[in-house]
Length: 180
Image (cartoon, rainbow, N blue to C red; front, side, top):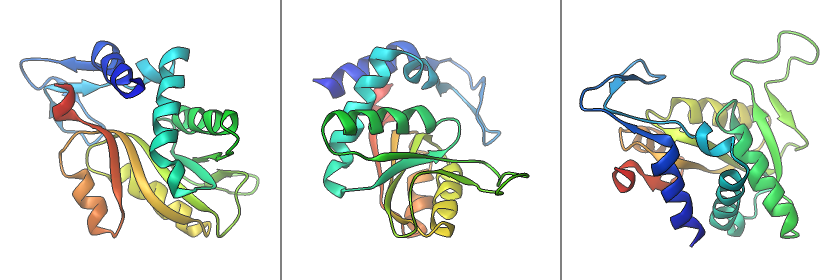
């Protein structure tokens, strides 16, 4: 029920479709559709449902942490963390900066985790997989055990396969073909 409600919310609020490829993606490619998940993560009801659905999807992996590349993964990680806490099964959020800090400790990954902790790398939308891979690499440099990459939406444009070629398990709540 929550998954179907989330799917309806994404279709209603986040999915933009045009007849011609007018949407510029972060990869630079133009597309006929765009998925703006900030329309979900900035809404209390939607982000709570997203947190519940993702927590249910990953809880059996027993991760100590969830997070990914800022900005897209941040609210998703916080939502999963909050739901996990309410369920009595705390999973800590973490944030991966695009580049290491240029001051202070110079950290690229922020959070309350330690080397050896098991983590799930989150992604809002996977297109090429490059953002998720950058987050995975930063997590591995911190000594985290990366269990998998979990996206909200897989655009089905090769990102899953690119990440799998790197030896990563990749999951998504939705494929774009389910949303169109």
